[in-house]
Image (cartoon, rainbow, N blue to C red; front, side):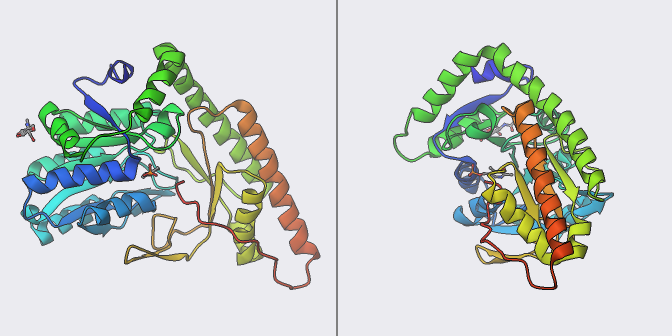
Length: 361
Ligand SMILES: *Cc1c(COP(=O)(O)O)cnc(C)c1O
Ligand SMILES: *[C@@H]1O[C@H](CO)[C@@H](O)[C@H](O)[C@H]1NC(C)=O
């Protein structure tokens, strides 16, 4: 049935795994270990999402973090830096290239065609993290093109992010049936059938046309959200960052808020959190975070020095017009009250409630 949903992407083989995306990526890396006994490194264009980083560490490999380059407002794959790393480390010492399609703006999907071409040239496997990319024809097209011009060995997508089922399942897919079977045989022991059952029930309820309708609505809501965010940004002296290559996530600058007080940016994050605007997240500048022994400067922003603090909003599958309207309304309220607070405040620090780190969750 899932194959049917993905039917215009030819020759895809896939199976449902009763584990979330991160662990499913781990399973792919562990399967590659047998084919690449010298492979120690995984080349990874940086994306600030903990579980995909941990997926490589858990599998026992050394992630080689390649910083993105800034093009306009967008953060994009630095192909020269990737190739330099491959040459420096030696292709045979590299387990695979680990790229990403769906991600928070202002990062955009990796240059999959170029990465796939390079992987073919150096004979290095290529695994794609397509966490919430099934809902985007752009992400799926990138994968298809990558596989056509170069090499993509496996791509992994979350069940909950694409099919509105509970967390705990993923689809591992690829173009080579025997390789995908090898991955499925790596799974140790018996497995829970509930993720498969959940997705089966959901898809039978929706039908292929129902699912396609949801995807069409996602696209429409993306345009609506972009328009509304642009209007909101203008009203608050900010701007919608120009990230046309990202089909799901948007970002609005918070430069003015930062100038007002750097604490205001963090405070906006906690205000949104307590007002249950869970679709929005705030990224302040200069966060440092240690993840499994690796220090990420500028953590959450996919970059060591992104020039603007910003706010993310996403139009994911299942979002409605009312969701967007309500989100914008609450955002507007929060931004207004922060401005008012700062104009009446006499230099005392803003009270902070604990903002939890919900990056990518
Ligand atoms: C959701 C997500 C993951 C994986 O998270 P899991 O909790 O393991 O499903 C990895 N990368 C990105 C970009 C994601 O959005
Ligand atoms: C497909 O996968 C099998 C098993 O891993 C491998 O031996 C074979 O070379 C692969 N075929 C292609 C065309 O890559």
